[in-house]
Each structure stands twice: as structure tokens, then as C-alpha cells.
Image 1 (cartoon, protein in one colour):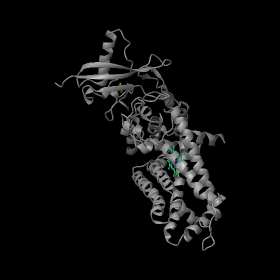
Image 2 (cartoon, helix red, strand yellow):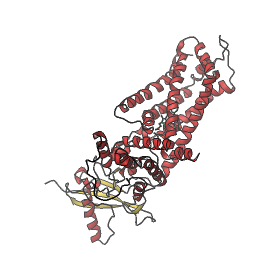
Image 3 (tube, protein in one colour):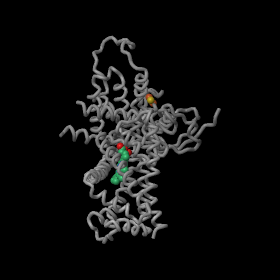
Image 4 (tube, chains in turn red, yellow):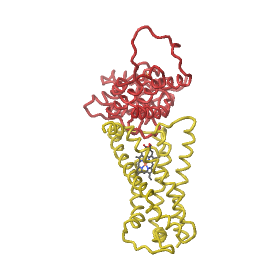
Length: 251
Length: 227
Ligand code: HEM
Ligand code: FES
């Protein structure tokens, strides 16, 4: 049994979207190394509730790295110090006993803070609504093998589809650009025959929506891909640019 | 018209212009370097001076040179526009950031590096181009071929320590700018593929080292060895 640990947490508190926020410092004790980061925050919140204080609000849902809800900027990096994981998959063993941990919300004009560490990511939903779909009649699902797909493309599409829309790419980008997210969504459908019909319209509309939401422009620093919990590759951005240019000169 | 403004006004469109102008500047710098190296031809500047006349009088080159001035201005203008846009995209900054764990310093400092290059360019153009093309006050001598002796002005300028230092700063900024910028331009154009991207990256790094070093060799050599 490893020794239990104590941490100093510096957490962004903000009552609502309109009020000013500030950092507040808390202490948590007796945290075992196997505790997940979110469980550690649950422990803090129990403590706060017992003292009659407002618990720290943060987004989470599945707690197994698939829903994309958890979204914390921990010690200067989205989803904390480990590679290719979400906050819910982060464990306290990576933080030394006595460490000071700074927790901030995603910072972007297009992701306004709702409360504490919770931000409004509906800008992503609107980008997807602008074109991140295929128009088919619903009904019985078509047999998966009915449409032949090249293996390479199936794999690339699958890689792009791994995006869970958590927003870490925007959070870490120095320009708060949503290119990696939008590009993953554009790529996923552009690579498949089902996505081909609306391919051009999709690229143009999704890019237009991305710009309208107030995200910044990409400078290819690669920080998004380096911090993406799903390891989405920078090449999806090149693909989106290709899709966009092709769409623009052929429609 | 609205189709053009829509396309070039989008975030990707603005980047397209930066990329194309950047690549054009990259191409120009190679030619500029090769021509300038005639300073070292050991003929007291005759070759260099006739090269300068050729560059400022041959019609095709003159036409391309206007495209070049336009490209520099467009590149700098869009750099500035994107800088404003990108700053607005993050009104509240982080208290703690570990950017060095996910991206290179050069890639995050493109605006700073570009601004240094821009200041350097103004100084550089004022020193030579302005004098040569618009008679900025310097009385040129005439060389053995009857050409104005730009070579002599170059040698004179590079006797000043502060000029040489300014050139070295400008060229260092250029090196870092292109360390990221060369491959970035291809990525922006949508050219990213396992087959050729490693070659582009290698070429970019080679360019970012060799070309600025080539340019730096002139002020440094002249300062130390040519009086
Ligand atoms: C001879 C001089 C220059 C050359 C050869 C050059 C080249 C390049 C190239 C190839 C890129 C990459 C384009 C892309 O990512 O699509 C770039 C980007 C950039 N340049 Fe320049 N540039 C020069 C001067 C300048 C100047 C004078 C400025 C600013 C005043 C500037 C500011 C920028 C900025 C902000 C970027 C954006 C970085 C990015 O998106 O990756 N550059 N430059
Ligand atoms: S809570 Fe679902 S990914 Fe973290």
C-alpha cells in the first residue's frame, strides 16, 4: 500500500458567466495514489459541502475517456501531464506528495465559462450541425459490408472518428483555433463513400461556422495534436484545407 | 467578387495567402543569395555591380520585383490581421502554461520573428535599395564597366559594428521563422503525406540553416577581412 498524499489545489472559481472569477486555494489530504483526478475533486467537494461551501463545478460524464465531457487545464496542460488520456483517466500517482496543482477552465472566446471549471462548448455542436453529418433516410441499418471501402481509408476515417470533441485542441492552441476538431470531423466523412455526396458543401459550411464562432486561425504549431487525448494527427488539418480549397474552386 | 473575398477572407483563406507569399519569398531568397555571393568573386565588385544593374533593369525581373514588394506587404498585413484575430480568440489567458511540452518556440513566435524580419527589411532596403534605385543621398562611384559601384557601398556599410550586428539579428530571426515556416507553408496548402512530408521537413530545416548562414557570411567576412 503506497503512502497517502497531500496536495494544494489552486482552482479557478467563477460564480457565473457574467461575474468575475478568481483563483482559490484548497488543501486535500489522505489521497491514495490510485485515486483518479476527478475522484480527488469529489473528495474536495465533499469537504466543501460539509463546510457549507459551494462545491467546485466541473464537467464529467462517462469517466472512462469516451464522452469528451471532462475538460480541465491542469498545471498548464489540457487533461493534465499524462499523454493521450482525458482528465477522467488521469490518476493522482503522477503528482508528487505535497505538489501544488493549478486547475483552470478551457480558455477561449468561443468557450465562455458557465461556472467555475465548466465551459460552454456548444460552438462545437454548431460546427457539426453546419455539415458534420450525412443525409440519409433512417430505417433499418444498412449492412455494414454492403458498401466496399478501401482499407486505408477505413482506417484513416476511424482515426479521425476517434475525436471525442472535448476541446483540448482549442484549449491548448495559442490561437484558440478549432482546426483540429473541425478537420477531424471533415476528414472522417470525406474519407468514406457515404460522406461523398455532401463533401464540398460540408467543408465550406463547417469552416464558415468555425470562423463565425470566433475561434482563432491555425499557425501549425502542432500543440493540438500533441495534447489530443485521442492522438488525432495534424494531417487531418491538411486534408481539411485540401477539401476546402477543392470545394471553393469547383463549386 | 464575394466568392473571392469569402474564400480569401476565411481563416484558411488568409493562411493560404500567407503560405503562397511566404513560399514566393523563400524562392526569392535563394536567387537573392546566389546573386549576392558574387561579392566574393574577387574582381573588386565588377560582377556584383553588373548583377545589381541587371536586377533593377531587366523588364521581367522588374515585373517580378513588384510582385515581391506586394508579397512582403501582403504577408505582413495578413500576419498582423491574423495576430489580432488570434488574440481576440483568447481574451483570458492561462495562469500556468507549459507550451514547450507541446510545440516549438519558433512555431509560437512567428509574429515576433516576422516583426523582427520586417524591421530588418526596412533597414536593409533603406541602406542599399533606396540608395541604388532612388538616390538616397549616397554619391555612387563608377566602376571599370561604367556601372555604379554598389559593391563599394556594401563594403562601407559592413564596416559598422552595429550594422553587422543588426544583420545577424535579422538573419537569426529569419532562420527561426523558416525553421517553422517552411514546412508550415506546405501543411497550410494541404500538402501533408507520409511519403513526402519528411522530405519537406528536412528540406525546410536545411534551408533555415543554410540560407541565413549564407547571407550572414557576407557582413561577417567583409567586417573582419575586407577594409
Ligand atoms: C523574407 C521574409 C519572409 C519569409 C521568407 C517568410 C516566410 C514565411 C512562411 C513560409 C510562412 C509559413 C506560411 C504558412 O504557415 O502557411 C510564414 C508565416 C508567417 N510569417 Fe513570414 N516570412 C517572411 C517575412 C515575414 C514578415 C515580415 C512578417 C511579419 C511582419 C511575417 C510574419 C509571419 C507570420 C505571423 C506567419 C504565420 C505563422 C504561421 O502561420 O505558421 N513573415 N512566413
Ligand atoms: S468524463 Fe467522459 S471522457 Fe472524461
